[in-house]
Length: 313
Image (cartoon, rainbow, N blue to C red; front, side, top):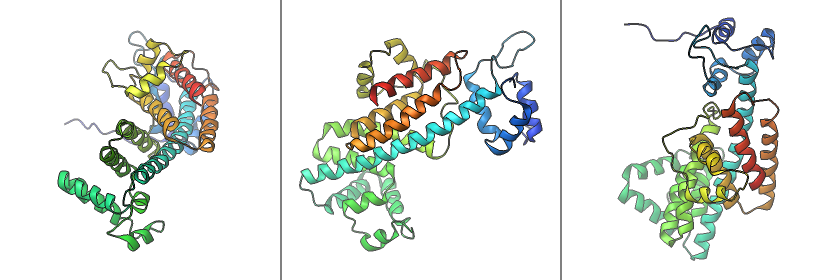
């Protein structure tokens, strides 16, 4: 059997590997590249962004990348780091205001703050025993927490809703959001529940430092765009139908846009909106520091996000 394992490369070997792939060093010296790989970003993270570049198929340079500079990889790495921090903050905002909306609708229906949690747990136990056990585990896992262990020890197993939501993770909050939406027949919340799942997906990617901009390709397989998001995008006059369909075929861009939409829709604080706007416009300015005109995939993706940020924030 052929050994398919890839071995750890020294920094010198990493640079040799980059050169062998046709990656140029015209914008940055090899000394600076060495320092960057040693101190700023590890090789595996940096090289991931090569997916956005095409390779020569024929000729002397077959298999090498077309118009790819090390400076491009470095810049995309830094933009992606900035993007992840912005997305994480926006998703935290969305999670917080989703909880606010739950409490508001419960208050409007004169709900017992304890009974609704009991009913939710009973519903899980009846319809999804695995999720019921997991939810109990989520609550008990915080018993020794420095931050909410006192809440668990004080209220377990009879949690009022405001304590319950303080302890459970975002995913459980979303399922509780759907439970409340169904309980009170709030169609808007039922629709929002699916968007909150999307927000959680991009939040998890950002929180775990997964690369986001390393695959901006357009896909023929259709990822259905949420109707509410699609309708809102149609109101942006600077984005054509063709551009909208192309960019939203990429699930990563689609999730980013869905989070931006949900932030606009669910966050009720003007101060929080303003803070988000400052972050997003700073990110938007970061997109254009480096010139990506020779790569239409990256350039047009950044232009697409720019138009949305400019219109919605």
